[in-house]
Amino acid sequence: MPIPNEPQITPKGQRRAGPEIWLIGGAGDVGSRLTSLLLDRTKAAITIISRSNRISGGQNPDRLCFRTVDIRTKGAARMIPPKALVVNLTEATPPELVAEMVANGCTFLETSASPAYVNALRDGIRGRDVGGVLITCVGMAPGLIDLMAEFIARNEHINAVDIGIEMGLGRHYGAAATEWFLATAGTNYLLFHNGSLVQTPAGALQRLFVFDASESGRLALGFGFAGREILTGKPAGALSGRRYFVAIDPPLVTRSLSWALSLGLGPWIARNAQWLSRQLSRFPGIGQIRTRMIVEGLCDDGMPTAYARVTTGDQADATATMILATLNTIMSGNVSRVGLATIIDYLTLADSIAALKEILPETRMDISGIEAKAS
Image 1: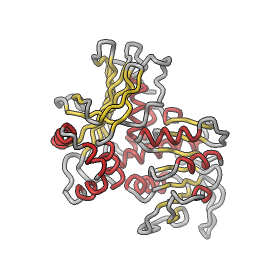
Image 2: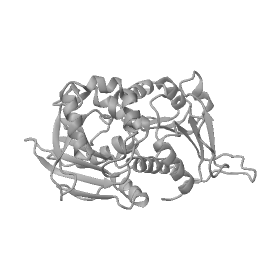
Image 3: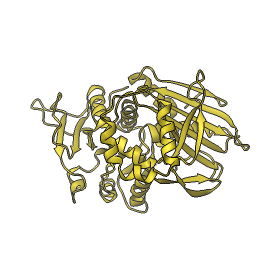
Image 4: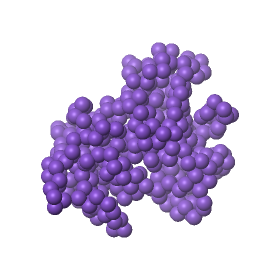
């Protein structure tokens, strides 16, 4: 990737004017990987905001500093300078603080997959006079998966898309990500179907996805994801449905979760997500360390007529790479927006795959049923 505009650093390590990136909740799984990428592949100065006081400065002290702060504290947003680049990696950040930062001219990248949280952030910006921009759906899911959906939906014969995400359990993910998954598995989400939003329990919808042509279909469970605000390039109402499904590798875990949800254990799982996350961390990793995604375009009879499939590496590495690619576009100065935006305003599917292949060479994509130029 090209190196963005370099910040000016004095011989004593004091930072001058230049790109400064603030990572809220940056001490976690994705944050640590993103920090390493930023240090290795950009010249930006990085500030990590975290409640944890167990993080160390590590290498590059001239470009990296830590603030032990609870972002929920009143006035916490005022520590971040106007017009800063901010990446939010925790849903603990209050929507009113986000609105304050965007009003002050910050470019705020939101990585959350929770529809309710993302909608609250967007509602805080709508109708407000702001000098910055809130960019939602930055990452893999949401993010890359929605760029795939937008690309597939260009086919004039497609009026709905089904989106499948498979996560390998070859290693333990960060506590926050695991808690989010468990909490989401036990709650309802709004499903856009035939022009209406319908409350749907997670796991109520189920279907098989072929994530690799050499395999049989794998069970995936319906889940709620942020991403409905991603436009498809079609007139309003032309796309009748967008459904998200999650599968776990090994498949036995998906089937076990399906069984638990069918017994009505979803609310219990959601209430005990933190405790369950701690218990699961004590078990060894199982399955693959990879992320696989598929978007199927459906025609009038509900049959798939086009698809895009992506296989890449560890989900946290891939998410960090997608954030880096978005930041690089912003710092290049080629895209400038104010107000509300999504990842689709900054990256194409081709951009994303190229960025992923550079960091994760095992990344591959195949497309069928639509022109294969993913630009």
